[in-house]
Length: 238
Length: 228
Image (spheres, rainbow over the protein chains, first blue to last red):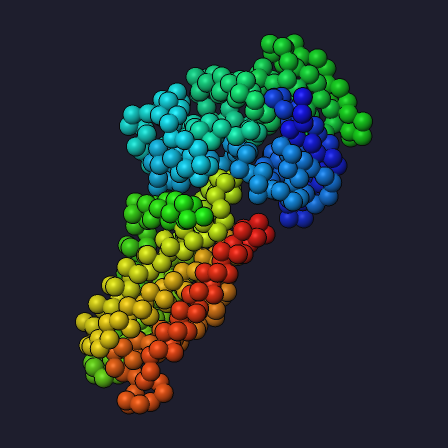
Protein backbone atom coordinates (compact mmCIF):
# COMPACT_ATOMS: atom_id res chain seq x y z
CA UNK A 1 0.00 0.00 0.00
CA UNK A 2 1.55 3.39 -0.96
CA UNK A 3 2.35 5.87 1.80
CA UNK A 4 -0.02 8.81 2.09
CA UNK A 5 1.80 10.63 4.90
CA UNK A 6 5.48 10.39 5.71
CA UNK A 7 7.06 12.69 8.31
CA UNK A 8 10.71 12.27 9.26
CA UNK A 9 12.07 14.17 12.26
CA UNK A 10 9.47 16.86 11.54
CA UNK A 11 10.01 19.99 13.56
CA UNK A 12 7.76 23.01 13.41
CA UNK A 13 7.59 26.15 15.46
CA UNK A 14 4.63 28.40 16.19
CA UNK A 15 5.98 31.74 17.37
CA UNK A 16 8.86 30.75 19.65
CA UNK A 17 7.17 27.57 20.79
CA UNK A 18 8.28 24.27 19.23
CA UNK A 19 4.96 22.64 18.38
CA UNK A 20 6.60 19.51 16.95
CA UNK A 21 9.99 18.34 18.17
CA UNK A 22 10.93 15.65 15.69
CA UNK A 23 7.85 13.68 14.69
CA UNK A 24 8.26 10.45 12.74
CA UNK A 25 5.03 9.22 11.27
CA UNK A 26 4.04 7.04 8.34
CA UNK A 27 0.44 6.53 7.29
CA UNK A 28 -0.48 4.18 4.47
CA UNK A 29 -3.06 5.13 1.86
CA UNK A 30 -6.51 4.05 2.99
CA UNK A 31 -5.48 3.82 6.64
CA UNK A 32 -7.34 5.49 9.50
CA UNK A 33 -4.95 6.70 12.19
CA UNK A 34 -6.00 8.33 15.44
CA UNK A 35 -3.61 10.75 17.12
CA UNK A 36 -3.96 10.78 20.89
CA UNK A 37 -2.15 12.68 23.60
CA UNK A 38 -2.59 15.37 26.22
CA UNK A 39 -3.33 19.01 25.40
CA UNK A 40 -0.33 20.59 23.71
CA UNK A 41 1.08 17.25 22.60
CA UNK A 42 1.17 18.38 18.98
CA UNK A 43 -1.86 16.60 17.52
CA UNK A 44 -3.32 19.69 15.82
CA UNK A 45 0.15 20.73 14.62
CA UNK A 46 0.64 17.35 12.93
CA UNK A 47 -2.68 17.83 11.12
CA UNK A 48 -1.79 21.38 10.08
CA UNK A 49 1.62 20.28 8.84
CA UNK A 50 -0.02 17.52 6.80
CA UNK A 51 -2.44 20.10 5.35
CA UNK A 52 0.46 22.30 4.27
CA UNK A 53 -0.75 25.08 6.57
CA UNK A 54 2.17 24.95 9.00
CA UNK A 55 5.68 24.99 7.52
CA UNK A 56 8.38 22.57 8.59
CA UNK A 57 11.28 24.23 10.39
CA UNK A 58 13.35 21.07 10.13
CA UNK A 59 13.00 17.49 9.00
CA UNK A 60 11.24 16.14 5.95
CA UNK A 61 7.67 15.54 5.00
CA UNK A 62 5.81 14.06 2.05
CA UNK A 63 2.02 14.02 1.91
CA UNK A 64 0.17 12.43 -1.03
CA UNK A 65 3.46 12.49 -2.90
CA UNK A 66 3.89 16.24 -2.41
CA UNK A 67 7.01 17.57 -0.69
CA UNK A 68 5.78 19.77 2.17
CA UNK A 69 8.57 22.30 1.61
CA UNK A 70 8.03 22.73 -2.11
CA UNK A 71 4.52 21.64 -3.04
CA UNK A 72 2.31 22.80 -0.16
CA UNK A 73 -0.04 24.90 -2.36
CA UNK A 74 -0.60 21.98 -4.73
CA UNK A 75 -1.14 19.62 -1.79
CA UNK A 76 -3.86 21.75 -0.19
CA UNK A 77 -6.26 21.15 -3.07
CA UNK A 78 -6.19 17.43 -2.30
CA UNK A 79 -6.56 17.71 1.46
CA UNK A 80 -9.63 18.43 3.56
CA UNK A 81 -9.40 19.63 7.13
CA UNK A 82 -12.02 19.82 9.85
CA UNK A 83 -10.35 22.04 12.42
CA UNK A 84 -11.38 23.61 15.71
CA UNK A 85 -12.74 26.56 13.72
CA UNK A 86 -15.39 25.75 11.16
CA UNK A 87 -13.83 28.03 8.48
CA UNK A 88 -17.26 29.28 7.41
CA UNK A 89 -18.67 32.71 6.55
CA UNK A 90 -21.30 33.74 9.10
CA UNK A 91 -23.28 35.94 6.69
CA UNK A 92 -23.65 33.25 4.04
CA UNK A 93 -26.31 30.58 4.33
CA UNK A 94 -25.50 26.91 4.81
CA UNK A 95 -26.01 26.20 1.12
CA UNK A 96 -23.99 29.24 0.01
CA UNK A 97 -21.05 28.20 2.18
CA UNK A 98 -21.07 24.69 0.80
CA UNK A 99 -21.58 25.91 -2.77
CA UNK A 100 -18.61 28.28 -2.48
CA UNK A 101 -16.34 25.48 -1.22
CA UNK A 102 -17.53 23.08 -3.94
CA UNK A 103 -17.07 25.60 -6.73
CA UNK A 104 -13.67 26.63 -5.38
CA UNK A 105 -12.58 23.01 -5.50
CA UNK A 106 -13.94 22.69 -9.03
CA UNK A 107 -16.21 19.84 -7.87
CA UNK A 108 -19.77 19.10 -8.94
CA UNK A 109 -22.77 20.52 -7.09
CA UNK A 110 -24.82 17.44 -7.87
CA UNK A 111 -24.24 15.69 -4.54
CA UNK A 112 -24.67 18.73 -2.31
CA UNK A 113 -28.38 18.27 -1.59
CA UNK A 114 -28.02 14.67 -0.47
CA UNK A 115 -25.06 15.56 1.75
CA UNK A 116 -27.03 18.38 3.40
CA UNK A 117 -30.04 16.10 3.94
CA UNK A 118 -27.86 13.40 5.43
CA UNK A 119 -26.37 15.85 7.93
CA UNK A 120 -29.84 17.24 8.74
CA UNK A 121 -29.01 20.56 7.12
CA UNK A 122 -31.84 20.55 4.60
CA UNK A 123 -35.10 22.50 4.59
CA UNK A 124 -35.08 25.79 6.46
CA UNK A 125 -31.59 25.23 7.90
CA UNK A 126 -30.18 25.17 4.37
CA UNK A 127 -31.29 28.79 3.88
CA UNK A 128 -30.15 29.97 7.33
CA UNK A 129 -27.02 32.14 7.68
CA UNK A 130 -24.32 30.09 9.38
CA UNK A 131 -23.88 32.78 12.04
CA UNK A 132 -27.30 31.87 13.44
CA UNK A 133 -26.58 28.16 13.82
CA UNK A 134 -25.58 26.28 16.96
CA UNK A 135 -22.00 25.06 17.40
CA UNK A 136 -23.04 21.51 16.52
CA UNK A 137 -24.82 22.64 13.35
CA UNK A 138 -21.79 24.69 12.31
CA UNK A 139 -19.69 21.57 12.80
CA UNK A 140 -22.05 19.67 10.52
CA UNK A 141 -21.78 22.37 7.85
CA UNK A 142 -18.00 22.15 8.02
CA UNK A 143 -18.33 18.38 7.64
CA UNK A 144 -20.64 18.89 4.66
CA UNK A 145 -17.99 21.10 3.04
CA UNK A 146 -15.42 18.37 3.60
CA UNK A 147 -17.67 15.64 2.17
CA UNK A 148 -18.58 17.56 -0.96
CA UNK A 149 -14.94 18.39 -1.71
CA UNK A 150 -14.02 14.66 -1.64
CA UNK A 151 -10.40 15.08 -0.49
CA UNK A 152 -7.81 12.32 -0.72
CA UNK A 153 -6.62 12.96 2.83
CA UNK A 154 -9.09 13.78 5.60
CA UNK A 155 -7.61 15.62 8.56
CA UNK A 156 -10.10 15.67 11.41
CA UNK A 157 -9.33 17.62 14.58
CA UNK A 158 -11.64 16.57 17.42
CA UNK A 159 -14.38 15.80 14.89
CA UNK A 160 -16.85 14.55 17.51
CA UNK A 161 -16.75 17.76 19.53
CA UNK A 162 -20.13 19.47 19.61
CA UNK A 163 -21.94 16.72 17.71
CA UNK A 164 -24.96 14.89 19.11
CA UNK A 165 -25.19 11.08 19.21
CA UNK A 166 -26.85 10.81 15.81
CA UNK A 167 -24.34 13.09 14.11
CA UNK A 168 -21.49 11.12 15.71
CA UNK A 169 -22.89 7.94 14.22
CA UNK A 170 -23.18 9.60 10.82
CA UNK A 171 -19.59 10.81 11.13
CA UNK A 172 -18.48 7.22 11.68
CA UNK A 173 -20.32 6.14 8.53
CA UNK A 174 -18.83 9.01 6.55
CA UNK A 175 -15.26 8.15 7.62
CA UNK A 176 -15.82 4.51 6.68
CA UNK A 177 -17.21 5.51 3.28
CA UNK A 178 -14.29 7.85 2.64
CA UNK A 179 -11.82 5.04 3.35
CA UNK A 180 -13.77 2.67 1.13
CA UNK A 181 -13.47 5.33 -1.58
CA UNK A 182 -9.68 5.28 -1.22
CA UNK A 183 -9.16 8.22 1.14
CA UNK A 184 -6.78 8.28 4.08
CA UNK A 185 -7.91 9.63 7.45
CA UNK A 186 -5.80 11.21 10.18
CA UNK A 187 -7.88 12.01 13.21
CA UNK A 188 -6.93 13.80 16.43
CA UNK A 189 -9.18 12.96 19.32
CA UNK A 190 -9.54 12.92 23.08
CA UNK A 191 -12.48 10.56 22.83
CA UNK A 192 -11.24 6.97 22.43
CA UNK A 193 -14.73 5.55 22.76
CA UNK A 194 -15.75 7.42 19.62
CA UNK A 195 -12.55 7.49 17.59
CA UNK A 196 -10.84 4.16 18.19
CA UNK A 197 -13.59 2.02 16.63
CA UNK A 198 -12.99 3.97 13.40
CA UNK A 199 -9.23 3.48 13.43
CA UNK A 200 -6.69 0.97 12.22
CA UNK A 201 -4.00 2.36 14.50
CA UNK A 202 -3.60 4.80 17.37
CA UNK A 203 -0.47 6.93 17.60
CA UNK A 204 0.42 8.62 20.89
CA UNK A 205 2.07 12.01 21.00
CA UNK A 206 3.64 13.70 23.98
CA UNK A 207 5.61 16.94 23.93
CA UNK A 208 5.66 17.19 20.15
CA UNK A 209 6.98 13.65 19.62
CA UNK A 210 5.50 10.28 18.79
CA UNK A 211 6.02 8.07 21.86
CA UNK A 212 4.11 4.96 20.95
CA UNK A 213 1.43 3.32 18.88
CA UNK A 214 -1.01 0.45 19.04
CA UNK A 215 -3.05 -1.33 16.39
CA UNK A 216 -6.73 -1.11 17.21
CA UNK A 217 -8.29 -2.47 14.02
CA UNK A 218 -11.09 -4.81 14.99
CA UNK A 219 -11.09 -3.77 18.63
CA UNK A 220 -14.69 -3.00 19.53
CA UNK A 221 -13.74 -0.60 22.32
CA UNK A 222 -10.60 0.94 23.85
CA UNK A 223 -10.60 -1.71 26.62
CA UNK A 224 -10.19 -4.44 24.00
CA UNK A 225 -7.26 -2.71 22.29
CA UNK A 226 -3.71 -4.00 22.81
CA UNK A 227 -1.20 -2.17 25.00
CA UNK A 228 0.72 0.84 23.71
CA UNK A 229 3.93 -0.17 21.96
CA UNK A 230 6.80 2.25 22.49
CA UNK A 231 8.49 3.82 19.52
CA UNK A 232 12.33 3.94 19.46
CA UNK A 233 13.41 7.40 20.55
CA UNK A 234 10.08 8.12 22.16
CA UNK A 235 10.36 10.11 25.35
CA UNK A 236 7.58 8.42 27.19
CA UNK A 237 5.31 5.42 27.03
CA UNK A 238 1.88 5.65 28.60
CA UNK B 1 -7.99 32.50 -12.59
CA UNK B 2 -10.99 34.44 -13.91
CA UNK B 3 -13.43 31.83 -12.62
CA UNK B 4 -11.86 32.16 -9.17
CA UNK B 5 -11.98 35.96 -9.46
CA UNK B 6 -15.74 35.89 -10.07
CA UNK B 7 -16.25 33.34 -7.30
CA UNK B 8 -14.37 35.34 -4.65
CA UNK B 9 -15.83 38.69 -5.72
CA UNK B 10 -19.32 37.20 -5.68
CA UNK B 11 -18.75 35.74 -2.22
CA UNK B 12 -17.43 39.03 -0.76
CA UNK B 13 -20.20 41.09 -2.35
CA UNK B 14 -22.89 38.67 -1.18
CA UNK B 15 -21.54 38.93 2.36
CA UNK B 16 -21.57 42.73 2.07
CA UNK B 17 -25.14 42.69 0.78
CA UNK B 18 -26.15 40.70 3.87
CA UNK B 19 -24.08 42.51 6.49
CA UNK B 20 -24.15 45.99 4.91
CA UNK B 21 -21.11 46.99 6.96
CA UNK B 22 -19.56 49.10 4.21
CA UNK B 23 -22.83 50.67 3.09
CA UNK B 24 -24.14 51.40 6.59
CA UNK B 25 -20.88 52.32 8.29
CA UNK B 26 -18.19 53.31 5.78
CA UNK B 27 -20.36 55.41 3.45
CA UNK B 28 -21.88 57.49 6.28
CA UNK B 29 -18.40 58.11 7.73
CA UNK B 30 -17.13 59.30 4.34
CA UNK B 31 -20.15 61.57 3.87
CA UNK B 32 -19.64 62.89 7.39
CA UNK B 33 -16.08 63.86 6.46
CA UNK B 34 -17.44 65.99 3.60
CA UNK B 35 -20.08 67.58 5.84
CA UNK B 36 -17.61 68.39 8.62
CA UNK B 37 -15.15 69.93 6.18
CA UNK B 38 -17.99 71.99 4.74
CA UNK B 39 -18.62 73.38 8.25
CA UNK B 40 -14.90 73.96 8.79
CA UNK B 41 -14.46 75.87 5.52
CA UNK B 42 -17.34 78.24 6.29
CA UNK B 43 -20.24 79.48 4.20
CA UNK B 44 -18.15 80.96 1.36
CA UNK B 45 -18.58 78.72 -1.70
CA UNK B 46 -15.29 79.65 -3.42
CA UNK B 47 -12.85 77.95 -0.99
CA UNK B 48 -15.22 75.02 -0.69
CA UNK B 49 -15.28 74.45 -4.44
CA UNK B 50 -11.49 74.84 -4.51
CA UNK B 51 -11.02 72.23 -1.77
CA UNK B 52 -13.69 69.82 -3.03
CA UNK B 53 -11.46 67.56 -5.19
CA UNK B 54 -8.90 67.05 -2.43
CA UNK B 55 -11.55 66.39 0.19
CA UNK B 56 -13.28 63.92 -2.11
CA UNK B 57 -10.11 61.86 -2.55
CA UNK B 58 -9.18 62.09 1.15
CA UNK B 59 -12.60 60.71 2.00
CA UNK B 60 -12.21 57.93 -0.60
CA UNK B 61 -8.72 57.11 0.70
CA UNK B 62 -9.86 56.68 4.30
CA UNK B 63 -12.93 54.76 3.21
CA UNK B 64 -10.72 52.40 1.20
CA UNK B 65 -8.74 51.56 4.36
CA UNK B 66 -11.99 50.60 6.08
CA UNK B 67 -13.21 48.59 3.08
CA UNK B 68 -9.94 46.66 2.84
CA UNK B 69 -9.92 45.99 6.58
CA UNK B 70 -13.45 44.65 6.29
CA UNK B 71 -12.47 42.49 3.31
CA UNK B 72 -9.73 40.75 5.33
CA UNK B 73 -11.74 40.66 8.55
CA UNK B 74 -14.07 38.26 6.71
CA UNK B 75 -11.21 35.84 6.29
CA UNK B 76 -9.87 36.29 9.83
CA UNK B 77 -13.10 35.14 11.46
CA UNK B 78 -13.66 31.47 12.29
CA UNK B 79 -10.53 30.25 10.53
CA UNK B 80 -11.91 31.22 7.11
CA UNK B 81 -8.40 32.13 6.00
CA UNK B 82 -7.30 28.51 6.38
CA UNK B 83 -10.41 27.47 4.51
CA UNK B 84 -9.50 29.82 1.68
CA UNK B 85 -5.94 28.46 1.56
CA UNK B 86 -7.26 24.90 1.44
CA UNK B 87 -9.95 25.74 -1.09
CA UNK B 88 -7.79 25.23 -4.15
CA UNK B 89 -8.45 28.75 -5.42
CA UNK B 90 -5.75 30.40 -7.49
CA UNK B 91 -4.13 33.11 -5.29
CA UNK B 92 -4.18 35.50 -8.26
CA UNK B 93 -7.92 34.88 -8.59
CA UNK B 94 -8.40 35.51 -4.87
CA UNK B 95 -6.48 38.79 -5.18
CA UNK B 96 -8.43 39.97 -8.20
CA UNK B 97 -11.74 38.87 -6.67
CA UNK B 98 -11.14 40.72 -3.42
CA UNK B 99 -9.87 43.74 -5.36
CA UNK B 100 -12.97 43.75 -7.56
CA UNK B 101 -15.30 43.54 -4.55
CA UNK B 102 -13.53 46.40 -2.76
CA UNK B 103 -13.45 48.44 -5.99
CA UNK B 104 -17.19 48.03 -6.57
CA UNK B 105 -17.97 49.14 -3.03
CA UNK B 106 -15.65 52.14 -3.42
CA UNK B 107 -17.26 53.01 -6.76
CA UNK B 108 -20.69 53.15 -5.12
CA UNK B 109 -19.21 55.29 -2.35
CA UNK B 110 -17.71 57.64 -4.93
CA UNK B 111 -21.07 58.14 -6.63
CA UNK B 112 -22.54 59.16 -3.28
CA UNK B 113 -19.56 61.42 -2.51
CA UNK B 114 -19.69 63.03 -5.95
CA UNK B 115 -23.30 63.97 -5.33
CA UNK B 116 -22.24 65.29 -1.92
CA UNK B 117 -19.48 67.42 -3.46
CA UNK B 118 -21.90 68.92 -5.97
CA UNK B 119 -24.59 69.63 -3.37
CA UNK B 120 -22.47 70.67 -0.37
CA UNK B 121 -19.55 72.36 -2.11
CA UNK B 122 -21.36 73.82 -5.09
CA UNK B 123 -18.98 72.19 -7.59
CA UNK B 124 -19.83 72.13 -11.29
CA UNK B 125 -18.62 69.20 -13.35
CA UNK B 126 -17.09 70.39 -16.65
CA UNK B 127 -15.74 67.09 -17.89
CA UNK B 128 -17.75 64.03 -16.95
CA UNK B 129 -15.33 61.83 -18.93
CA UNK B 130 -12.36 62.86 -16.82
CA UNK B 131 -14.35 62.43 -13.62
CA UNK B 132 -15.32 58.90 -14.62
CA UNK B 133 -11.86 57.86 -15.86
CA UNK B 134 -10.15 59.31 -12.78
CA UNK B 135 -12.70 57.64 -10.55
CA UNK B 136 -12.34 54.23 -12.19
CA UNK B 137 -8.55 54.27 -12.40
CA UNK B 138 -8.13 55.68 -8.90
CA UNK B 139 -10.58 53.16 -7.48
CA UNK B 140 -8.85 50.24 -9.19
CA UNK B 141 -5.47 51.43 -7.92
CA UNK B 142 -6.65 51.94 -4.35
CA UNK B 143 -8.46 48.60 -4.27
CA UNK B 144 -5.47 46.71 -5.71
CA UNK B 145 -2.88 48.36 -3.47
CA UNK B 146 -5.18 48.07 -0.46
CA UNK B 147 -5.78 44.36 -1.07
CA UNK B 148 -2.06 43.75 -1.44
CA UNK B 149 -1.19 45.52 1.81
CA UNK B 150 -4.24 43.98 3.47
CA UNK B 151 -2.81 40.53 2.69
CA UNK B 152 0.56 41.63 4.05
CA UNK B 153 -0.97 42.74 7.34
CA UNK B 154 -3.57 39.95 7.53
CA UNK B 155 -1.56 37.50 9.60
CA UNK B 156 -0.44 40.04 12.18
CA UNK B 157 -2.12 40.91 15.47
CA UNK B 158 -1.68 44.63 14.84
CA UNK B 159 -3.23 44.47 11.37
CA UNK B 160 -5.91 47.11 12.07
CA UNK B 161 -3.37 49.75 13.02
CA UNK B 162 -0.62 48.57 10.69
CA UNK B 163 -2.66 48.68 7.49
CA UNK B 164 -3.15 52.49 7.42
CA UNK B 165 0.56 53.00 8.11
CA UNK B 166 1.53 50.73 5.24
CA UNK B 167 -1.18 51.69 2.80
CA UNK B 168 -1.76 55.44 3.12
CA UNK B 169 1.78 56.55 2.16
CA UNK B 170 1.73 54.18 -0.81
CA UNK B 171 -1.64 55.55 -1.92
CA UNK B 172 -0.38 59.15 -1.90
CA UNK B 173 0.07 59.22 -5.72
CA UNK B 174 -3.64 58.41 -6.11
CA UNK B 175 -4.54 61.24 -3.75
CA UNK B 176 -2.34 63.66 -5.67
CA UNK B 177 -3.25 62.56 -9.20
CA UNK B 178 -6.93 62.08 -8.42
CA UNK B 179 -7.15 65.52 -6.87
CA UNK B 180 -5.40 67.19 -9.81
CA UNK B 181 -7.49 65.33 -12.37
CA UNK B 182 -10.67 66.34 -10.54
CA UNK B 183 -9.51 69.94 -10.25
CA UNK B 184 -9.22 70.03 -14.02
CA UNK B 185 -12.56 68.28 -14.50
CA UNK B 186 -14.28 70.67 -12.07
CA UNK B 187 -12.55 73.72 -13.50
CA UNK B 188 -10.74 74.67 -10.29
CA UNK B 189 -7.22 73.90 -11.50
CA UNK B 190 -6.06 77.42 -12.30
CA UNK B 191 -5.82 79.57 -15.41
CA UNK B 192 -6.24 78.11 -18.88
CA UNK B 193 -2.85 77.18 -20.33
CA UNK B 194 -1.24 76.42 -16.97
CA UNK B 195 0.66 73.16 -16.83
CA UNK B 196 -1.56 72.18 -13.91
CA UNK B 197 -4.62 72.76 -16.04
CA UNK B 198 -3.93 69.64 -18.13
CA UNK B 199 -5.66 66.60 -16.68
CA UNK B 200 -4.21 63.93 -18.97
CA UNK B 201 -0.87 63.41 -17.19
CA UNK B 202 -2.69 62.86 -13.91
CA UNK B 203 -5.12 60.44 -15.49
CA UNK B 204 -2.16 58.57 -16.95
CA UNK B 205 -0.53 58.43 -13.52
CA UNK B 206 -3.72 56.96 -12.06
CA UNK B 207 -3.87 54.36 -14.84
CA UNK B 208 -0.21 53.42 -14.41
CA UNK B 209 -0.64 53.13 -10.62
CA UNK B 210 -3.62 50.82 -11.08
CA UNK B 211 -1.85 48.70 -13.71
CA UNK B 212 1.30 48.34 -11.60
CA UNK B 213 -0.54 47.27 -8.45
CA UNK B 214 -2.88 44.93 -10.30
CA UNK B 215 0.09 43.22 -11.95
CA UNK B 216 2.07 43.18 -8.70
CA UNK B 217 -0.85 41.68 -6.82
CA UNK B 218 -1.38 38.92 -9.37
CA UNK B 219 2.27 37.93 -9.04
CA UNK B 220 2.96 38.26 -5.31
CA UNK B 221 -0.40 37.73 -3.57
CA UNK B 222 0.24 33.96 -3.34
CA UNK B 223 3.70 34.27 -1.73
CA UNK B 224 2.31 36.97 0.57
CA UNK B 225 -0.44 34.63 1.74
CA UNK B 226 2.14 31.95 2.42
CA UNK B 227 4.39 34.28 4.37
CA UNK B 228 1.78 36.09 6.46
